[in-house]
Image (cartoon, rainbow, N blue to C red; front, side):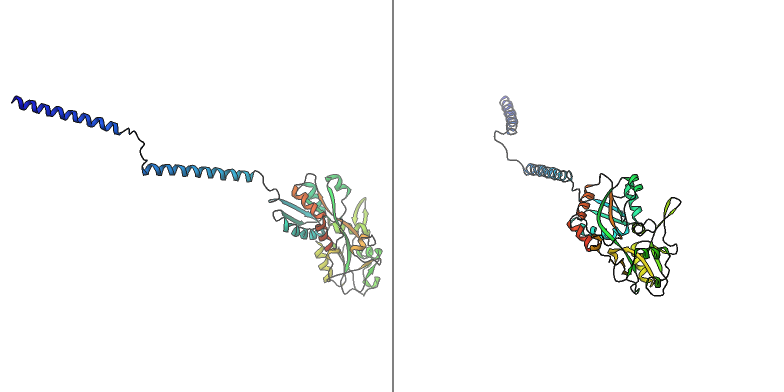
Length: 328
């Protein structure tokens, strides 16, 4: 009995020692002496972090590039130039704009035909970048606005009649009498027995102002200068309207810019001199005036570049093609 108890006790002590040994081996295995191979999950996480880091780097590079592009904007890509004034100047101006935009498509140029006087005040008030005038600037306008005057061409003002009218030449005095209503029938100047129909531009027109000054169609009303053109005249707004009205009236007479001449009307000689660009240059054709653009100081780079181009070879060539007299 005693021997059986001792045997059982020995077996229990051996089991306890074995359990202690297993616990010790487990602790040693948790801290291996050689590095373990990372698990698939660990490798995937590392790759994902690396990719994320690369993406962040690319994004940073992209943002830096974008910032660099916007820090030096192209000042000519979104430029805008507003122009208003004389209808005479507006016609070649639109052709100048079309040609300029071929190589400068990003510059938006707007042209409005509102008359010379309105163009002077618009430039003077700063509501447009460039004003247009087809007459000399008045002293009162110079004092009020102090604008820069730039002549882009010279123009002859042609006296036009219906193509069926046999009268081909008029003196300056005859022209004055016709527009004042002193001569009322074409037979008085060698034409047919037909009533004279005078066609003129509206008040504020640069062409009308220049024509009145050169021909002498002005009168003094108590110290104030006024037009002496007959009150029975048909008043038309715009050079095109004057030309169309004369073309529709067999007894019509009007005045338009030389650049508007076509086969719908006939330009008469003045004192034996034909209205041509060459005769305007040499001074033999005397009914002529400058075509002006007007600016304030401190114009934009886009405006300066456009004006320089107008005064350059290409711009002046376009003015010549429109029967105006180039200045450069």
